[in-house]
Length: 408
Image 1 (tube, rainbow, N blue to C red):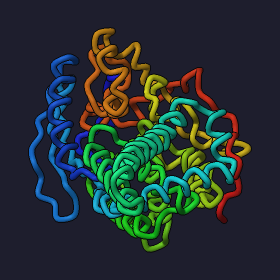
Image 2: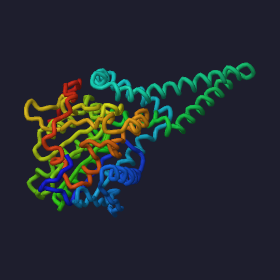
Image 3: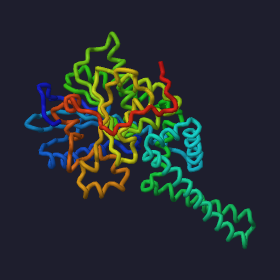
Image 4: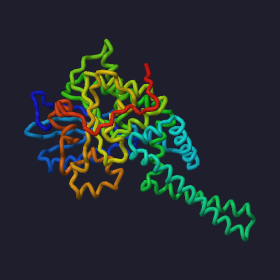
């Protein structure tokens, strides 16, 4: 899968959509720089990275030398971290109200029971912030109650109770301050971002996705050999929405002709967390339409060892959005971490759940046909790289969503 063809890619445009991440995009450039150097040393190629001035997005230039061919790539991060940051600005009481709302939504819509039947790993991961936040609350109340009881022996019970509440609140504040190590608040806000709209795209995000689509549609008419959209984690279903909008724009009578090959690479997707909700009819329609399009290549990569993804699940089929005939995409592949990582590296990562969820963007010391850096910076297009490749035999393609209606 690493050979070249007569249609080698000399100029590529990459648009990367991160998941629910409040951090600024510079971390993705530094991750790309360090991990591409590691992969190049392992696989025998070089990728040079330089910052690129870009008024719209945080971008960098890549120059690769792979198999004797040089490829120039402009790589841009489609930033929505400001929206993530705004969505996380809730008080502690507000967070606990949000917790109750999210749990109730997944229970009453029937999504939770179907998600468990699909993959238990990501559902267990979804319960992690719920359980941890409840334990934090119980511990805070227990300690606060004990303090109130102690002071109640010498003070009026109202004063003692007030002291106990202050102590409990102080403990909850301490827990929130160390959430950069616990990730309970972060994960709850992540799951709540789409759940609170029952699967519909939040208005503030939809406006941003429309801008992304406009810019990608313009790039398709420029002098690129390939335009590649990459969506990681919750960025995967956003990539679906953006690409569907791009194709609609390019189908307009006044649209400039598209000259570049078009690819969508989804990594560690969590599409069912959204598509199984009742108001996700538009997303299910977009999944349906992309699955039978002849204007793109769509490859979906995940790994069973990654407990934060619905591994090797066809996001179209499990959402009940597959056409009766003619489904072509996505090509569902397993990154097979237990095989593509050495035992030493795999053992060092397998309990670091968040780091493992980012492995798709990192170097493999026993690489197979999935190489993020050759895909995004090498001379072979996504379509050529996986031409003739069959889907993973362990692919899950049963329609399990409790809601399968699609927007017109």
